[in-house]
Image 1 (tube, one colour):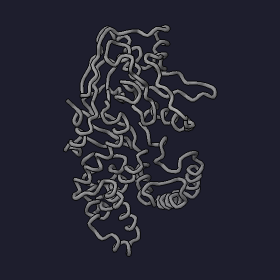
Image 2: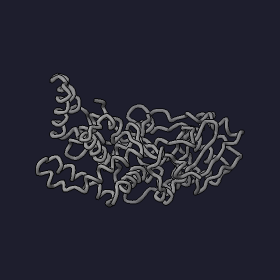
Image 3: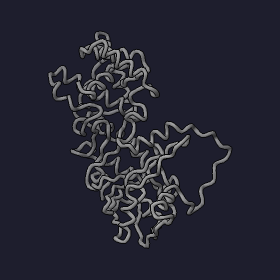
Length: 386
């Protein structure tokens, strides 16, 4: 049994639909599963002891475990958010920083160029549309030099500086220190649910920065474990599908399809079993097999969260839209942009148009949406392309 399969089985049997290390009943369920796998008592005790000694969160879907993007940068961001105490409420809000005040990014640029900030004489567009831009030849040297620059870690009792991804500082410089309309207006985001950059002052025109250099392909949006309601629903959907496959003798076909790894077509197929089961009087069956009481509760939860569904396809589509929409609404936020770019200077800005997203009919189509080892993926060109 793989780790994914173990987690799925533990989630399926758990009371809330997802395992909690702090729950004695969930820990007891894990022990039973490990016994069924014929592990030695010594190995089982060692595994349980390690879980109970784990500091922090009370379940496997807490932020900081599989709740952030699959990168060291996002791990640092989550670490910062968790370790920083909540600020005391102020009687009055702090004034906005003055225009052209040096930011940490500006100081970083100065440290690279001997105390100076190079200025570009070029203009770069920024609009409420999906569009492409190319860094001009006379700006490429600076662009490339800033590509991997990051803040230095702080020492002593100071909090570690939030991470900066590849190309983020380059993009900041290009639009903040040129002849562009956004010059002097960019602000750093770098919060748990904030986009990487704000293009027109803090809180306005968020831009999430990626440096895959593949603007025509599928973009990895990071891990989704922190979206607990979505994880719970996906566990139920694929758990029910796995149960149905067991009854039908098709267990082998289900091995690579679970809450953490699936494609749009898999979600639609799995939802057919959920929809079929939702039409059955599960309360009556629960009188014989009590586990069906929990299954009914979880299916009822899905129907409530999705606002009901009349067919398996409708339910699967609603699940897909919620799965991705919950992420996009936070980073970069509706109306913002996701920018994918390369060190050669090509940039594609996808405008995250909520209406275009919600009206896209082929959300379950091939390579449009999916998950891989707990990370969500979306084909941006299909939905937000020109």
